[in-house]
Image 1 (cartoon, helix red, strand yellow):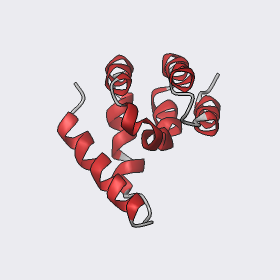
Image 2 (cartoon, rainbow, N blue to C red):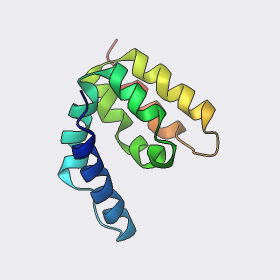
Image 3 (cartoon, helix red, strand yellow):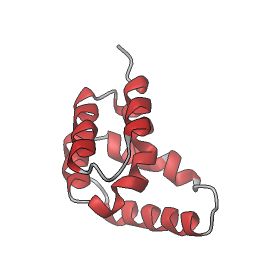
Length: 102
């Protein structure tokens, strides 16, 4: 099960760093992808309800893909791009695709 409280803490801290033009905290690059890669089905459900945060979360698509090696996740984020055409995630999706080992 995704620890929503912990995810929210990390996400809010990342938003705070963005507002102040600071580097992302290590939890953003290290802990969060592990949390999301543990169960891709849960992650998909979780992401499916986060329109307002999808753009910032797209920063870690590559790390989630690399950790999970899930083609299902790739299909999901491609669908997110079609769903939210106003959010440009093409580069992040391509990086995620490249992180999947064949």
